[in-house]
Length: 176
Image (cartoon, rainbow, N blue to C red; front, side, top):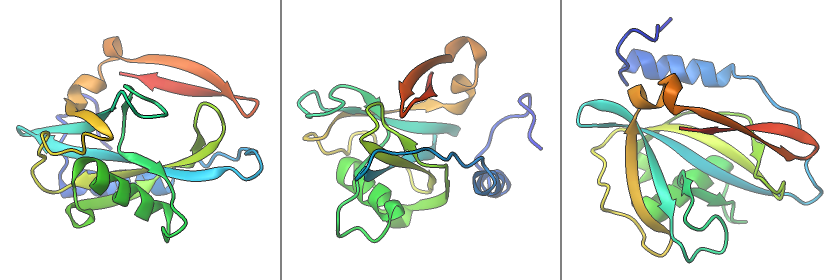
């Protein structure tokens, strides 16, 4: 068991532990709207300047939905996508140029609705094995890419919890 006082590292042992925890994470059962579309995102873990980090994108201001928002790479599942995991990896390649072969998928949390309930979003957690190039992104979809160290994100003073109502449930929305 990792303690918060121990330094965080994305070594083989820690990544294996993350994978096991994802496999055993609670499963949500929500009643989605009829004909809800599937979508998937990648929660990209990476190491930047020796620090375990999480990668984020800022969506292009001209996008129809979620313009200018901070997000993870991802999008709606295409009919030709064989799985939602494929969707997350395809969208990651399209948005920030990282190949599927460079990502170890650790697992997936339960699907959650977007704010309007029109999408069932599958959040895949993956470790980017290669050096991350923050300047390589598709400017039609992304205006910038940045990372934040995990040590920063877990500090209580930088976290916020907001709630939003969707599908007659109150869902948590975390903000670093």
